[in-house]
Image (tube, rainbow, N blue to C red; front, top):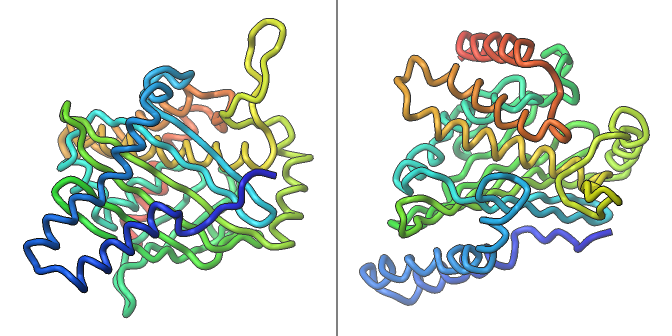
Amino acid sequence: MGTHVVSPSSARLLRWILVFVLICFTGAKSFAAELDTLATPLRAKYTELNKQLFNNRFQRTLYLNSVDSSHDLKGEIYAVVDYPFATVNTALNSPANWCDVLILHVYIRYCHASSSKVGTVLTVNLSNKYDQPLADTYRAEFNYRGVITTPDYFAVELNAENGPLGTHDYRIWIEATPLEDGRTFLHFTYAYAFGVVGRLTMQGYLVTTGRDKVGFTVTDKLANDQPVYIKGVRGVVERNTMRYYLAIDAYLAALAVPPEAQLEKRLQLWYNDTDQYARQLHELERGDYLAMKRKEYQGQQVAQ
């Protein structure tokens, strides 16, 4: 097994400690100025990963990593996106926009943002196969939290206590900071935990439907120099982490077209980008995906 997944991560914990200290012991002006240091760890990560970001198999400025333990999984992506920080911040700091992002995922069948006594909640229907009827999917409640926003850093968190098939403690974390060239450095994390039922269900999937599926981490090379990709639970979390990240990127890219054309643009971009990694992500043909998602999106709008 890999390294134990710690939540929140040490970097996030240090940031919260810093915020607490600043609130308690500094004045308003000093507090506002010192908040800029929250971007420092993320900028340091950009420097650390510079070689991997710009020289990899993904054909985009991206680094993917995954870890697993006996009871949880985490996938994360660091990426340079071709959009200004202000655009990324505005787009991803809105819970309603997140529903337009999440619905692109082939296994997300419905999403609706609403307010509750504890804040904003995203009601999301999760399926374990693309042709599963909506009535048979699992409905999860994701708490949405805009953690912090400064002129050069923002962070957003979504978490759900329970998920399907014995999984729980779902966590989506996204943070970003501007780069000097007008682009944005983004960090996306997708993680969840599982108990005995979840572990057994996962093992059953891996020896049946998922036995030939792979992730993105290269574990070896064949004699003809072809890569051998990771399988098992890390392959599962890597595939979904990439699907979610590509949904974020497709949403951001589609903002460049008129509002009435954005849905179709997002759908086309998500399918094109996932098809670039067909070995890992191909599930159904383009026409089937587009028809399914157009119908789901329309149903989602009617329900809202």
